[in-house]
Image 1 (cartoon, rainbow, N blue to C red):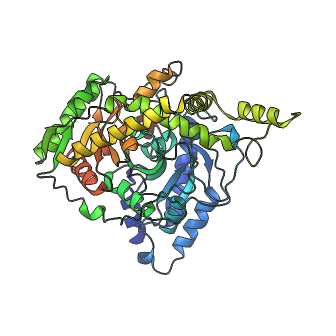
Image 2 (image 1 turned 45 degrees about the horizontal axis):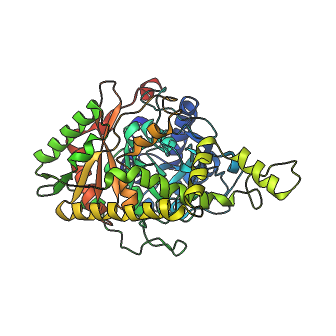
Image 3 (image 1 turned 60 degrees about the vertical axis):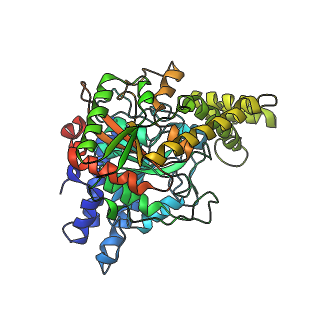
Length: 489
């Protein structure tokens, strides 16, 4: 077994069979990270000592078969998810020296399942971005082409999986921040239903939208990681008590009779020719497997991007008000009064994209404008949710591209925020409606850059969505293709 062939299931099976030790797996992952991170900037903090300690404990276990479903599997955690004793920056100067005193629930459950926490991955500051260029600690490069963006905001996690630094990683998805970087980097990105995974320990961006999700090489691996994290948590009042089904057991490859809805009118949203060709071919694969393909209508989804940016920025303005230099995080020095401390702290701590969104969010919540903007956006959000519910009454899943284009060049869209925001045109609908969605590799464009298929399912019906994604993956095998950096590394 080498790093380049690792999957979550493969590592665990080899460890349980005694073919490899947890120490060997851990050291191989750390070597891989150290060898490639200078090119990719995917990791902000390594947790080598902790990972080695976890590996020693696993190797000393009297019965490996009694260990958890992620035993000896190296994982990476997006740096806006709290880890006890390990720096958590959220990609911001504001939290550059913050070390959380506790683990997020999702991290607790990964560790309890036997995962080896290798380190924390780079991300757009506070999860705000579609390219990972808004990190205070530098942009992440795409393993398929170092001058291209890896997508955002979970770009570090996606790049780490694509470059085979780790078999799996976790990220957060507010408007597409797991799925869009997964698409750009050619890996699987899985966002669960809102409430499926506890948000306890996730640094808040937009609380009615944020969800922790998984990234991996295969649909089965992403489902395995998500299943470990999912389930009720008394520390998060928005976390659902819904039973977590056996997603892996449902991955039969059989999609005969499954109804796949295609919102044809939505596909006109700036989709490149290469992406459209790959999407049409993906639909043909599902049809050949016995799925029924039918057009569906989402009449209000054309408003999803502006609705998302009104709601998300309003909630960000509220959530980020806590970073004032009083309780924790950055505090400006040499100030003469409290107001000056607030101003200088926030000026020095936040980057331009975060400031832009705070200003917009504060405006839409201000007196005289709240109902006109934020209130109206919430009403249209309800219409979007009803459109999805109506479409999913006649279809089991809805299929679209994940992104209208493949990975764009670093710096290409920084001067045009609206153009950047449109990269999320297909991903913002699911979080606005609270629905699960998954991005699956679906081929390559003429430049050799990954293209992805997105499937959106009914609330708490990840099973149907994953079943279709897995069936498509079995017939294509795009996930096996290596990015160029792997040949170089």
